[in-house]
Image 1 (cartoon, rainbow, N blue to C red):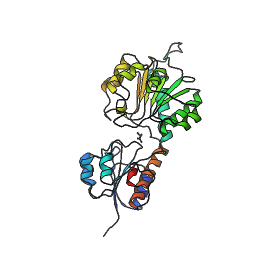
Image 2: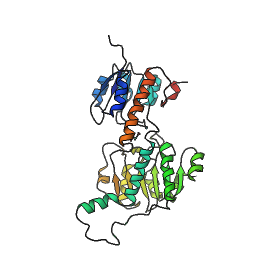
Image 3: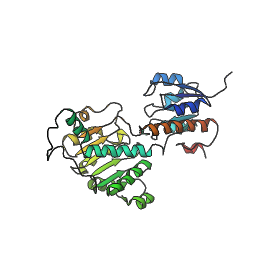
Image 4: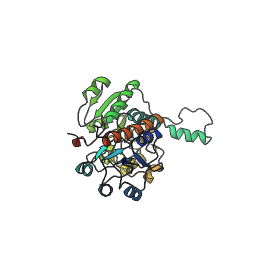
Length: 325
Ligand code: DGY
């Protein structure tokens, strides 16, 4: 009789993590590139002690009701708003995530969006491919300066701070807003804590790096957008619902802000139709952590999180830490 513990992997993640899990457990992998259908998840999680899931897999009460054996939910992401944390904690199920390894990849992507939006890279690429480049022109595709401007960072966790550190290379004034002051960030980067309203008024670029919680839902809406300069650029690589997408589309359409760069959306993978029609927004398909190196590290970390918990060790990346007093 096979007494090995059972793990469900809901998607085709890099092989390193899967092989690591296979050396300890019976592993069932769904070979889809984008997660598992909900009915399949509910059916296949039944006899599993662990699940390794994506940020698009909703792990709620109904899923947990069908998972009597479950001890750990290992999220293949740093954000874990897809998991009902209160319900998991009540049942003694550990939730783990993949912090640190994706910090720079995600911060780099926020910069990629900022540069693309400020220098109109996507518009320029389309223009060039369509054979429109006939001559150098003084007023062709004018964008915004980046060096020496003011950057406003909302959320000074690992990714927000890494994003801020990179702003130093462009001699920027760094403003940030966070629930708590981050003195080491202030010392290292010369960042200044300000109220959200002041940040929105003063910044040339605003980049969002906060987790999605009931408090941060629609943190940027009609009122906040109206505080921003008409030349401002909004970057979101955190979670879609942090921004009121309809209000953003309206502000962009009416040119009340200059442009935006988005990697995340309110109802992924659906993207608000109005945004799709605008040329002053750069749209990416939630690829913040999508580098070969980072995704490999995430796969190993997500597997190690499961191994630690199923082997009864103290795991490093548990988010409902109250389970381990
Ligand atoms: C995360 O890990 O939460 C990111 O959104 C993945 O890109």
